Image 1 (cartoon, rainbow, N blue to C red):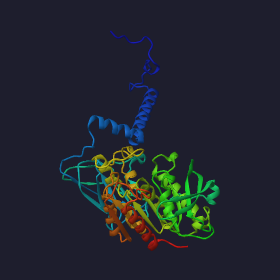
Image 2: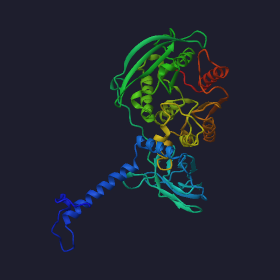
Image 3: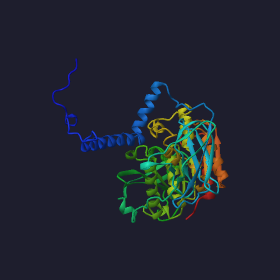
Image 4: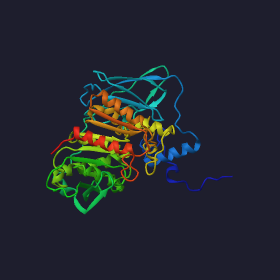
Length: 455
């Protein structure tokens, strides 16, 4: 038999009751505690950490509830408006709602800022939108938390207006080289087996930015080129350690380019936005002459692939006017459809990125990080574009390339594509260079020649 303790805790001790039966002080204090506790739990639940998202994914996988279930009931329709901060309608905005398994449903706003998305499975969603010149945004409610809309079968649901704000990247510091403590860390010569007799003078740099020491910046110049003579600039963003791609950098430098290359720094983890800002600093340093006169002040062509295409897509948003064009090699075009491929088991993502998609959270509830890495929805902002992809790619399917090409062409942006069937790798310059890899190299050179800027 359980017995009550002889001494009760302070809140449980008798108090003198007022005529309404409650002690006002006791009631208000405990109510406040309960409200604060509920708010804390609510906030934690509405803003889960990447770690919590991964744990949730692991548990649902163990329970056998992956891929995320999607209602099979008849679909419904979502309508709404997209406005700017002054309440003016935004035409041509892309509005997306994504299923729990990532599959997106998309529409463009008309001249009145109105959108209509049909064939949406019943369930709860958070709409998100983006437009040229505007930052990505998701529908929010109280305290800036995601606001859910509920789609019902055979019904039309009207969402509250979605407000977009102008996209304004954070200004970089003045006197940038000094502000980021730019320093030369090594100078050496490197060679490659392709093209014949390829060689480059290499300078390794490091800088400090936003709490991280970035030591992955390299400059490659043609061997024995006078360093004071400007060259066309090629800006490379690699998906893995920059020195692993040295043969590629040397190959392009040997074709009379100043190649400025950077790769993700370990301190940033898989934060593609932070990596993009590091790349933005590197680009600004190159154009300022801080990396040598050979880089010149001409606008470069940019190139990236695989994971670094996500970095490059964010760089294009923040510094797109400083680039003459870009080459995406095996790149990401739509993070929503990539998430769908992941949850359907169609792709295999290698370490350290294998849990990157689950870490972003359910796409139907947290669409913003997926939208931020989906250049397909801002194709009209893109500079001249070259898309390279192999049908053998097991990480990002070639359908990503097809989707981006369709959007770029529809936007009237100059476009070139190179699709091929080969092993699942790109620019494997070395003993294993294939005929497709060789052709890819020269096609990229031709694209740069036509759209690049000369000093």
